[in-house]
Length: 236
Image (cartoon, rainbow, N blue to C red; front, side, top):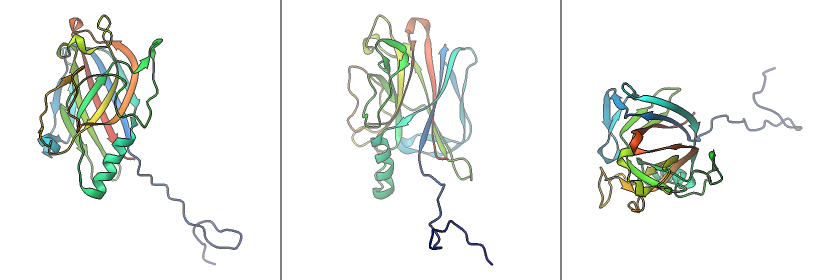
């Protein structure tokens, strides 16, 4: 007798197979806290992305001459409007790619700067953004059975951010990061775009795609502190 595939109910009818493939984008954030500014090392340019940004097959940070104090490697949350932008692109062709990255300073509990707040999928902004700027490097790895990902690399230097941007100017810290999307063509504001520091507001066509909060750490220009961030969005 030929064996049936799948599970049968009490009447002997075959039940629908259970599918294990899940189309669910995920995010991973790697953050290096450094004294001194790291440099970017690029692989081969393989094309141009949205906004005219070069796409590389690989890119990485070089910490020669820097002192790395700590590294974080954590997962993130992709907010609803980020998911909507991805789905809308599939249906309408209206592209809202990730072109910028932002950092903020109210991503932890006010009572304990070591305890990150829990972001919600409904969020449309960081808890308190202090600075955003264009991505430094874009890496795409696709076309294989196992790797389907894009990486966004960015360095933030404390010396580039005005002290007036921070919530507590006597104790500037960073404890949240997010990816920012914008129209591929840039509309009336083509890319590259200028950095924006609080309290100035960014162009209103830019939207939060994902967010990650983490333990606060000092971000003082006098100490030449820099953040090197590699943000990976992938499908398993």
